[in-house]
Image (cartoon, rainbow, N blue to C red; front, top):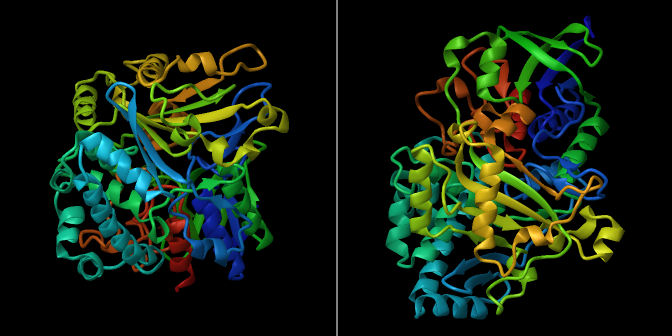
Length: 519
């Protein structure tokens, strides 16, 4: 490849890089994807996490909301996403819980009434999410269009849902909107959790990073629904890799990029290939699927090494059966099919934030859980399905990188499992399967682990704090599509750290490809 020249080189074979490569190759461009690991997909992969057990878990990313139907259609992806009937289950009090059933408003209203003693809170719930739905329908289509100016997006939101909605979501801390709309601590907590996924902030954080996080969690495909990828998250990346290869892109694994040089007209990418040989390849465009911090390192910009911090604990479990709940009125198959909220009352979330900010592991540790195999049993072998095995994915909130390694992974795991056990009728460990060596089938990944495993700076699953999906006047280099960099016009960001990045979406990959194609 020393003498090879490409129209575009994509640095990193995560799902966004594969989207960019597929679009460019389908447009007739010669494209190479250079991936450091021995497989593509980045965080959007499935893996046999437990030795000798035929179960393929979505090890890092696990649900899909932001992947536009446009990208699925444009690239001809063979991919099935299944809707979950139950939105969430939240235990409260002693042996009671609130089940939000997407298929039965009457039952959900009764659950709110049992929690709050009246109908006001459910009416407020419907009104609040009616407004976010209007925002979603208006804003989501803009994510795959040229990046709008702030004033443009403000008009789009105000026309769809009112000027007050713009103020509540884009101008004022989300805590104000939550406290204004809802009175009950449990309900407030359910709403706030979408603002804290992988984001270390509190409800009234003046940075508004929690607002940006909330926005991306409620606008997916104009509905905000979070769907289960059939076959696991690896099926998403697998479909994207096939689309890229079928279009003619060269996808090379085991290739670690060591430097990037670009001058606006041409570029060179140096890397070490799978044999250990050092190579240099030329290109017209370079699209970087790595983080902005990693791109700064590759171009030699030491001044741009901004501190970045992730804030989550990811736990994968394989169970011989679902555990019994203290709440005997709810079937565990309904409670675990949606998002199962643990210690996520509004006050509990604030306390957990304060504890973590002071350097302590939160107690009780807030987290949310769901069971992939209830919606999609295909990730389990026929034998495991017949025996009734199930998976559980736990995502712990307010577990910032600063807590590790002062606290170890096992301590954090014990804390989240203790909070889960508090709402179960039996310890979850009694239900855990054992692997081929007789060890319990449970693994935990801290932000430090995600940085080591995937190169995510500070373990941040979004590469850096999320930003609102409009153009920032302070960054004219971002260009028409928002993916430009300060280094050269032909060096673009196509990963989660780009504006309108974060989550499994493919949106930055699409936008970087459009910028390179001049669309």
